[in-house]
View 1: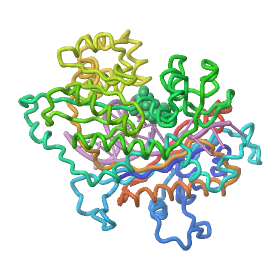
View 2: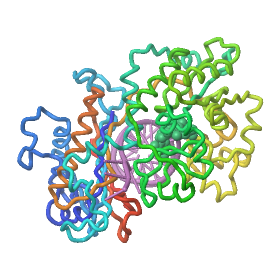
View 3: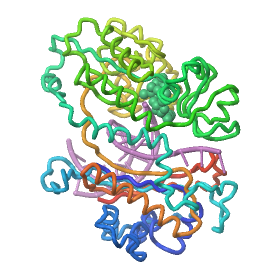
View 4: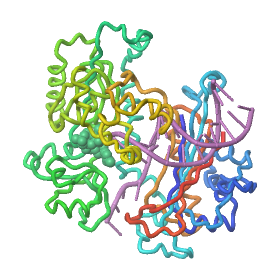
Length: 508
DNA sequence: ATCCTCCCCTAC
DNA sequence: TAAGGTAGGGGAGGAT
Ligand SMILES: Nc1ccn([C@H]2C[C@H](O)[C@@H](COP(=O)(O)OP(=O)(O)OP(=O)(O)O)O2)c(=O)n1
Ligand SMILES: [Mg+2]
Ligand SMILES: [Mg+2]
């Protein structure tokens, strides 16, 4: 397991750190071999008067100690105005129930890393309560419990931590996975041909909150924290009527309102998402024990060994049961591997299903935009665009050697395989965590050193809690900090971190 | 060769 | 006002 601490938003604070105290700034200054007394001092309350006096040994404290022991060398760039930071722990040592087995896992590289990020947006120079235009109420300045409250309202925190909750809830299930992988030593001799179903809820966050309002189903609806037509709150999910206007996850609510004035905004209901996700997985587990969770609204099901005559009938049954138990629609893709099943789901949406038989794979991919392939995001798409490649058919014309030369060994091979519909991954259980971390990149503003220390401490405590929850210890500790870029403007997003450079240091 | 650190990229 | 988290894959380049 890893631990990650994210520290976000400290404008001019880092300057102070740099000028006055070694601490964090020292930690990052390493390049010039500053001997930071201990970069992490800032994280250790005991150094500052033992705020945690009564608390039993905390992981966070241990972490701090580690850093102390190591004379971390960090230095704050002379420019000094830090903006955000992040901390994480990687390759944890599995402690199963508290007993440390660290010595027992020689074969598995156990690392424990904690990374801390520190972000800051506004960097008004002086420290007074400036806070610039955005010196809002809800920031690390005003709220001592900011981190805790923030996580309660963060959608990304919700979906980012969902997997761990799922694992705990369904760990009792027998996983008879990997029987297949064992017998797959000779992959292609499987007489049975693999069949995968990929299931994904339609506009999940919206579907759940309007599931009892049928009259809203053909009106444009989105889930967002704010309904302010000038606001920079982000749309989390938009239903399909709203998507016709161009409303989609991630855009600002003001932009959504601009292109869709009658857009109806609903608030989040995280508890309902949790409940519906449980119902969703209950249905899947009922039909098959080879279920791989992707997220709270999405999973792969390997039905190869079910002896099902018609996978489409099964998919249809699953979708029907999901709707009957949750009141929400799901779509499904059926194909011979995970890649094609996932792509098929996209075609199937909304409220549909799609089967792509092996003989149809080539034509299915021929005109498909490369951006639709999982693993190809904005950057890769742009790079390929520069080579005049925009569809899988065009990508297929490039040799594997050439792709590997341009994009690296693994990435090149992935591109070559995916453009041909080849995917050798197996549906399986989620393996043990490799890292655990926490970060905050919104609302982070410090007016003094105390603010930043408190914030970092909270982040450490959060990571400590999560490590404990996993029954695991870390081995490598990573601290990441976001620092306001030299001439960065005010963040576009309210209370955002704006244009930052990222700094990272880790110790083992 | 393999590992390690410090990133970037991606997905939900 | 608004809640830009979390984790894994992988590449570059250096240490071993
Ligand atoms: N940038 C994003 C992407 C997703 N989510 C949340 C809201 C989504 O409802 C949920 C599931 O993500 P999906 O990618 O499955 O998107 P939807 O379910 O909303 O729509 P679709 O019908 O395309 O699956 O995760 C989010 O908050 N922000
Ligand atoms: Mg979905
Ligand atoms: Mg999904």
